[in-house]
Image 1 (cartoon, helix red, strand yellow):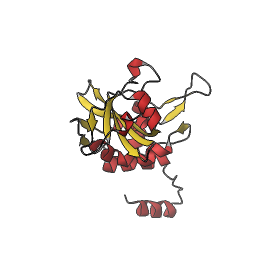
Image 2: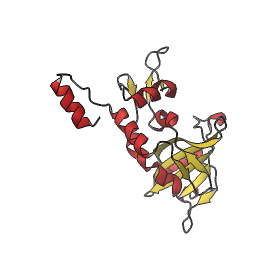
Image 3: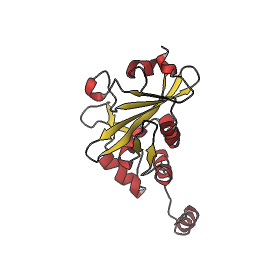
Image 4: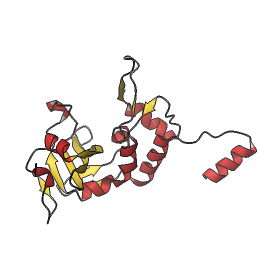
Length: 194
């Protein structure tokens, strides 16, 4: 049902339609454009964009019911079915709007990064770890970076996008192994020049 028809019907029946949350709107865009995509990267690695990873991509969190005031990652098994049904209520959740705004750009980053490194801060290694084998890096000026982390999901036998966010050159130098395992042809790895 189109949104115009839905609004007309609601008005005729005198029913108030609750506007969609920002997270729901971002998820709906993801479903139309990214969901189920398999992106070939220069490694070569084919990275799959799976709906169950959506909460991690935007850093969707809710308050931990067992510890007052502490935020924890939202459970995909709870959130994604609500998003699929179009009934997600953002109350009690928070997310990083900047990650959400950049979500649709992830395929470009994966297809054409400036460089790719092995992730030294893998969750198994500590240091405030981020799950992922590889760190894809794109430069924005001298210091700003957009990164994406990918890993192999052995349960499903696919490489998947773990997360992606904005950061800075110094942060990349602290989490990436040098030298880079890939550098865009005709370029150099600015991350390696620390």
